[in-house]
Amino acid sequence: MKKYSNVILFVIIILGFNNPCLANPLSNIMSFFQRDLVVDVLYKNHRNLIQGSEVYLTGDPKDQKVLIGKVRKVSLVESKMSKVEIVIDKKYKENIYETTQFVLMSNLFSENSNAYIVAISSLEASDKTPLESGSSVKGITFLEYKFATAGEELKKIMDIIKKQNDELLSQLEQYIDTFNIEAFHKKMDALINQISEFSSEQKETFKNDVLPSLRKAFDTMMEKLKEQNKMEKSKDLEKQLKEIENMVEV
Image 1 (spheres, rainbow, N blue to C red):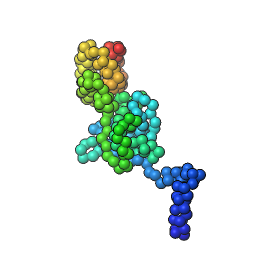
Image 2: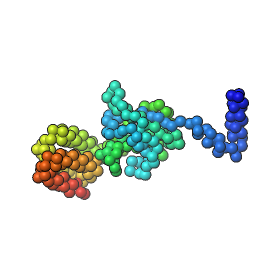
Image 3: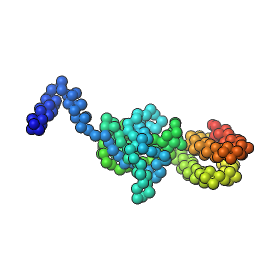
Image 4: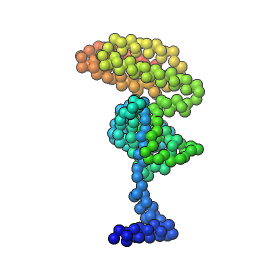
C-alpha cells in the first residue's frame, strides 16, 4: 500500500510541474509541508517580553506593521543575555533575511503597555540571504536602532539621552523600591535644571524616548504615596511632572 501511495504522490508532483492547471494545488501541497521559521534572538534585557508577545514585520518601526509571529519562550543563557525564541509564520519566511534587524519595542516605547518585537527588513537591502530556522541573532533596542540610523550630530544627542535614560530609570527604581520620596524629588529638581539647558533637538528626543518611561515611574511612586495617604507629596510630584512636560513641548 505504501508503494502505491509513493507512486501516486510522484505522479501528482510530475503533473504539477507540467500542467499549469495543477500548479496551484501543487503549491498548496508543498506549502503544507513547510514549517514556521524559528529563531533565537538575544537581548541584553528582554524588557518584559513574555510568552505570547507579538512579532511584527515592517520596513521602519514607525510605518505600518504586519503581525507575523509570536514569542514562544524567554530564557537566560550563560552570557546573562536574554534568549527570546520567536516563531514566524511560514508564509512570511521569505521576508526575513540574515540582515533583518529584530528591534525590541519595550513597553516604555510601545503604543500600548505590551512589549513586542519588530523585524525590520529593508526592501533596499543588498543582502537578502534567507535566515535559516534555528539561527541565533543579536537583537537591538529601539534606541539602539535609532542611534544606528541617525545622523552623526543626532547620534551624539541620542548617546547622551540613552545613557541618561538608563541611569535615570535605575535611580528612580531604587527610590521607588525603598520609598525614598525625598531623593526622588531631588532627582526631579536636578532633571528640571538640566532640561532647561537642552537644545530643541534634545528636548524632542527626551520627549519621545525618555518621558514615557518617566511618566510610568511617577505613576508608580504616586500610587505608593496614595497607599500611604500622603496626598500632599503626591500633588508635589504631579507639579514636577507637569513642569517637565511643559519644558519639553517644542
